[in-house]
Image 1 (tube, rainbow, N blue to C red):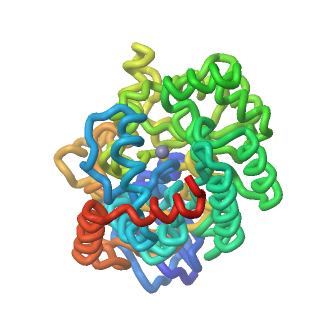
Image 2: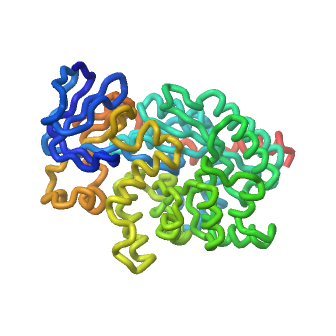
Image 3: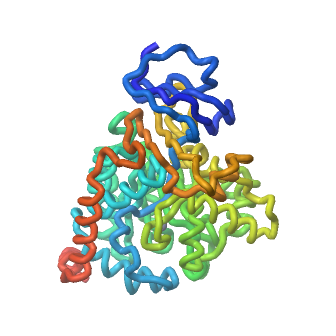
Length: 448
Ligand SMILES: [Zn+2]
């Protein structure tokens, strides 16, 4: 049989029905997995590219369910502040000066970091998502884009941003053989009015796309919602019709039992961002309770300014450790479950589990190879534990996305690494010294 790529003699963590395959072979043709199984049972393949997988672990590419890629430009700018101060005093003033090319170079830098640490798909929420699409396509990553919609008391602004989000969905949803998909991205319940959220709900239904929102991240904001509306953020979303299986809710920290039951009833998906939650001291989400209620939970890094890394191996380890402390129980979130969250459950959360998330015949070939010949991965008694507690993004040797080799022996083939870092650095410094022209323009448009 002919294939484009075969990987021989590797250990395969399929995250599908086949479980773990000790001495396996993977064959890829036309972007699809055409064989995933034991080497001895494989048909004989001829291939253009043959990768020796000896000493390597093959697994599904990691899926980052919640980030703001372009915020890499803000990395290290505002450290050790609570969420509201961080947003108001540091991030929002800088964001008001952003131009689309800043977002492009910031996103490109993040794409480079994600590829080098084994992430093959990311779900982004930001402004100028066209530029994020351009960066992701150039880098060769799979992405789910949500154009941020924020109102903050200005109805016209909400309307303009919703129109932009709808335009993005029309242009990109399902494009590039499903490599790009789109959700609508209302920022949060506290920054969008119920009227706007209802319009988002209607538009998402009409376009048949998901919705990506920050939910119950900060206790202060959650309490304010309760004071102002007399109900929880989750209930507000219920009243505007947004609780649905295609709602991706990031954070979900300050929830009552009733809120959790409502999320479960409507099959809402959750993105757990442990590092950002710890760094901003937002709180610890009750992941065990969410999972016990039957809710699908994916993992996210959140933006590089509140993490400050996009390494999903780092996030997997902290995801597990934080929950064990939360419940004073080492059995909570075992390693294999954490890997599920970073792969197949993440794919489910983004509505992409038919395409990616596990290594199974018929799915798109999004996979990574880790070099297990490392002191911290020796001996390999329990490969799932090694991946969560010992592995690092820098152990990733090869990245294949949609059947294309994007990184080989740690050399990224799609991007010029030095150039990407140089341009991002340039943009970050330029942004800091720039006058606030965009904000002045916004004031003119909004007459505020
Ligand atoms: Zn976020």
